[in-house]
Amino acid sequence: MKKQDLLIGGLAVLAGCATYVAPTKEETTQVIKSSFKERGPAKLDRLNQTEIQSVCSEAQMTGKPVPKTEAEALEKKVLATIKYPADGKYLGDFKNGEKIAQTGRGLQWSDKPGSENGGNCYACHQISPQEISFGNIGPSLKGYGKVRGYGDTVVKYTWGKIWNTHAYNLCSQMPRFGDAGILTEGQIKDVMALLLDPNSPVNK
Amino acid sequence: MRRQTWATTVAGMILSVASVSAHAQGSAAEGIARYREMLQDGNPAELTVALGEELWKTKRGPKNVSLEQCDLGLGPGVVKGAYAQMPRYFADADQVMDFESRVVWCMVNLQGMDKAEVIKHPYSGTGQKQTDTEALAAYAVEMSRGMPVAVPQNHPKEREAFERGRYTFYMRGGPYDFSCATCHGVNGQRIRLQDLPNISGNKADAQRAFTTWPAYRVSQGALRTMQWRLYDCFRQQRFPELVFLSPTSVDLITFLGVNANGAKMDAPAIKR
Image (cartoon, rainbow over all chains, first blue to last red; front, side, top):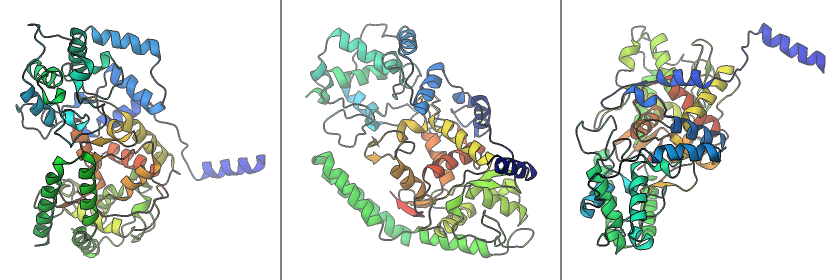
């Protein structure tokens, strides 16, 4: 047996076979950075991961969740950065909220510079009952206010969840609509109204 | 003419899908399933396959030779089954190459074409003629139809490509925090009504995804390649623009291919 191993090893050396060494994270990152070019609003700095992007990528790849204490500490840090509306008004126009929820445009290199971003909420969520083309990556939001009530706690939580979802669920797949500047404060108010105005079709 | 017929069919189907909006989502999904079934009746990709075969066999470039001496990994000139075994390591280039990288390599090294010129416009625009690399990919993949995917993991560089591909698949980034796995890492997920294959965790999904590209995309009236598929995914991920034939593109195709090993190639397919 041993003789055979030696023989195979020797042949490999003779054939000039390189041996496999797993690429490091740094090496892989360099390869990735060399593989993209900036275009329009999509600059190369988008490839620099935030701490949360990094730990959540690792967790999903390895199947090992971020340790509870680490996750809670990071969530707490995010919670402290949420900006609530200065005028204390949380709800805008639900009709405009519906439009924002329908639109998927924004921040792609193919999007017209200066055009208004959408929230693309229907890509992942069921929202208004009349819209049957909805995705299921996120939970259904049908009857959002009717089910959860319209109290201050629900309103403030919902604002925070839209502003930066990672405050409540570290590795949520939902974008940070406020924190990353995808939607304006006014747009978030309109989406809030879609979910929490008792007259919104969502709550009918 | 044929493309026009297709456009009419699609418009009709869109109308009929819209007309079911009063019913539950279930019946809309059934309507879409019927639409997809109808698409299988004929595939305009056949025209692109024919164009690709002609390009493969015609003497072209400054050296005025055909691609019939191009080695796709199974020996010079062997096209049958080669696509199903790529990406793979090529000693002459000392790198792992997917089909599109390799055919460009042959156009440059065998036919003497200018690389910058060959890769300048890799994807055809709406209503334009398919590009050479698109047509060649269509021909090559047709020549692997029904053959099992066998993307090798023998050479260390093939294994490195797979590992980097796996890392890239899970790498969240950009203003939306998306990775490939955001949409393609869980069973039974949809964007709107579009089913999303779970490429990392579901063998059958991974196999269906890999074996059905390149595909004729009805909504674009054009054949699209695997390089394009990744390029457009990253656009929607809000990443910068993926460079055609870049190492990351080959790494990801290696990851997808190895996950699909054993399945039978069934491309060019036809998709919505």
